[in-house]
Length: 198
Image 1 (spheres, one colour):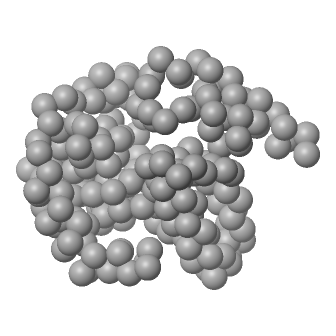
Image 2 (cartoon, one colour):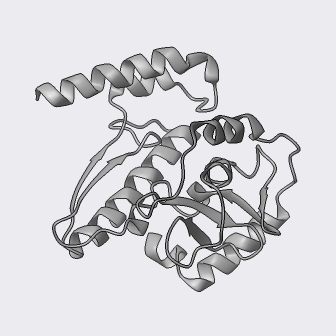
């Protein structure tokens, strides 16, 4: 099902839905400025995914043949949740969050035999609930599983991590709540130490 949504028919449906959503006015200009100040540039290794709003198709900025964009523009577009933030205009086209296509977009990694892919999937969780966030976490975990299998068929080694029960608890139900950032980062750091020691 996940791969079917990536087919041309799925893109048409996705584009139609994106065009029907209300247009928020809030932007992620602060994020764009922050990334721009880092001096990050596409060097052939970095890939940033977004979805072109009109067509519903995924664009992988930084890949061969992708539309020209700065890293700051691509990151802003990739983080622009369509019902929360205004689409990002790049060279006359509007782009929104790559998560509209896939929660992880692992299948876009230029990985083949011998490659190692590490996926940190913050919207997945080891445990889920019956509410909306539980549904999001199940979908995210399922999509990551499908994309992991696709990469492994290419010969890549794939390791994925989602939030532990403790980290998911710190994240809470509102994944956009910046007031929880310090606690969430601390929980993620503790989880990383536990994984390293295992």
